[in-house]
Length: 409
Image (cartoon, rainbow, N blue to C red; front, top):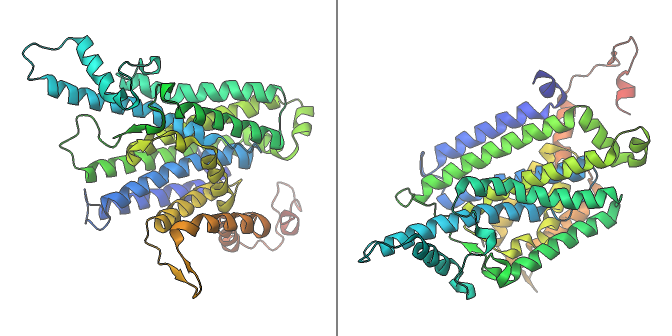
């Protein structure tokens, strides 16, 4: 652990900032504090932490390994679907049991199951449980599927793509095609996941009707913050040692790393699957706070937004991914929520609800052209100014090795 902190100076700072932030939100929340922060805003902060989590996953696979995946938000959505199935089943089961409690004869298990299926799938004209819902009654089984389904999809896709040595823009197109195919499939009513209607009412935790939403929102915020912290630690561990040096080498010169004898495809596949699982866990925490998930959440545009967040924050820096996701998420909430005042230009009034995406795209272009380090570069600038001035003192193990001028090159 000491080596991890030494190799990743941002880790202790990130942990300290996140802990202080979580404590501050708790003190200001309606559930356990002064009531300054509304329940809806606490939910927004919890969802933002989940988006920062998936941004770290994107930074690992793109910023550190050089794989521009335009499909990682699909894994995020799959995680939401897996936990959403249990939430809908368990919630509907309680409603059905309550409605059948006054029946003259106790209902049979088959009647209960049929009633639950009718409640869930009546909106798409069905009354039977599809096979994909066979474990929906079990919380732990669905939690296992949160990891297994996206992980298996990433494993199969990555193995087929990497063993064929598909790289660059062609790999990006393949990941986007995978996402589009999955999204189009889920839009169908016979997909077993209610088609365009998606899964709704996910914010209603089974058996928690007596617990205020203010309390539930802060619980989810804590869980999201903890998941973000653990993800940052895992990501820092992955990129800090020899493994991190190898994947950076793959990013910079894949052919040379392969020539040196490293199993490039194995390294890429491991990172691809790991980041898919991380993204799925983020989705499993995000959608119970959002309350609904539908196939539009898995559309390719969502994964493109994810790449934009990481680029704006500064790819190749874990804290850059977090900064980018948080800044863009909170700004988009502000703009789309109607809180940003309209900009009157005289001949035309800019309504930010309609124009914020244009600003986001313009920001991406400007960052790419003029500030490739993104917002994380500002952190680099501050830390560089705060670092001690060695004035040419030896920085290496030998006298005269890696002096200050050489280290700056």
